[in-house]
Length: 142
Image (tube, rainbow, N blue to C red; front, side, top):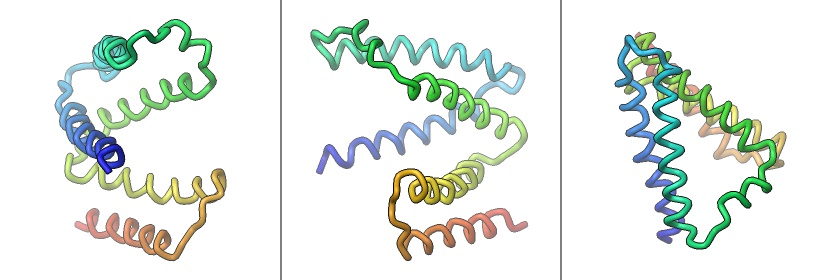
């Protein structure tokens, strides 16, 4: 049970801290300069964690396993980070921006799951999608 819960708990905590940090990037700082600092810290942390959690691993040997996914993921992460920073610079409230993007994400992934991964679209998923879209209408109603 723990192995099922801890990753989601880590994601939730990390996302909360992520949103706080993205909103707290100084408005006068270029978002890409901020990402250079962010990714430098991330590289150091990743190397330390690799060796701490993978005793006797072949660090350089891991790189022969690379396919397109980590490369595209790096580009995608830049888009996620810069999108969040610019959204906050544009004035999105921290309590709304993540809900809006997550709702659209949930709807989009429902279709990706069906079309690409052949996941079944159930009535519960359709109702969930409708609730997400209704929530967007409610949260953005002024």
